[in-house]
Image: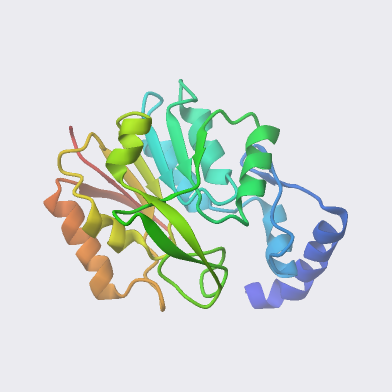
Length: 238
């Protein structure tokens, strides 16, 4: 179906690119990167970007949560989170890709976001090799093929010490989910909710690796709640 509409989306994307037209997404006005393909830019005009994450966040996130978001990208999900929270400053959104930061910052300012932005990668390593572009759409610490750069690593406890204890984790890190769950035992954390994109696809997570994620979450007391597209919500009672 998408292939059928591809010429139409290409034309729309060309117009968006030439006139630098922002896109409406869930009540926000969002500027997308001009280096996206023309068809991708055209598709943004229909407002469905990250719709599955937004759906589950709206359903399960509570207004008094303290949120850590990994993989903020250009800020659509980050702004959705921020709109829900009573205290808008109780959110830390992490985006290590230097190409995305100008768009994240501009979209934050344009839409009145009040959250903190971190440019690290959450890891036990002091430095992490990160690939900009390549196999993943906008960048990944696990996939090669793009421009290589080195990003500072911070542990989960580093962020807790710098900001506050988190009660909700929102995660879209392009195949890095298993590394995160292996590295950080959330059993003794205050995180009650995890909304994450599973990325079970070639060059990201295999079926076996995805089920290891499930086993780790279950062992740490989390239960599956709902799935929308490739995004899942898990929670536990603290």
